[in-house]
Image (cartoon, rainbow, N blue to C red; front, top):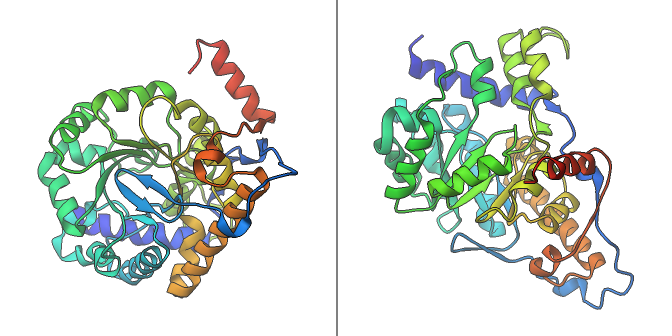
Length: 361
């Protein structure tokens, strides 16, 4: 099988595994965060304002449909439904890695359908750091043009690559490639992890490279070590069987989402908190801790297989839960929510204290 056929086939494998198997692992840390209840909120729930500006674009809520799919004909309708729902709700959306269509242009419509369905929405293109290094600005520009993107995300997925026999195992030269893209790109560049988190030190490197935003992609939630282990095994085997010891070992690798968010927030520009956000209360906690947007993927996948209305219903539920959390915190808008100081307990508190004791973050 040629490389371009393998890439497309892998996209479909990932989609099916995420739909059919339990691939969530770990604790992102939201259970260790408790918002302070305001018994006299002095605001009206009906007028809670969830709007936010991000990279020059207006969002009706701080919700971003995180990069999920594309690159196989069977993914086209999924992306169409996600995009239509995002357009209707006034939120943003990111496409999955566009490598498949960059290698095989006849797959471009599996991504371009997003812009067709959401002509006014904020849409982020997506290219891997290794592909950016190997193919340069040409591929980045093609990815942007393919979907008329408002920003381009450069994803860092080296845990996943390390566990793939066919993965890209050489990470050298990616930082200079990101620096060049940040210098030359006409649209904002988002540096994005895919499930292992970003530390304060790495965030500062990204800001210095010229990144416009960082998506922390923390540990807890969809686990790509688990996905790759299941892909290498027989995906029809009973749950838990067949995963290689290597993938099982590294299911526990990464910085939990809340810890990563606390490290990265305040180090530079805007932050997207992605990784294990499963409801509007998690979103409220993330905003309180410094997130500008909250990236959510897996909760939208099964609804997207059913229809646009199902996706819209999940979006509406997330936003309503966020609004209630804001109301009970006495926060009329997201700025006020961000100014609240939450309680942080448990393992998350211990990890943050450990970072402070070791020269801070």
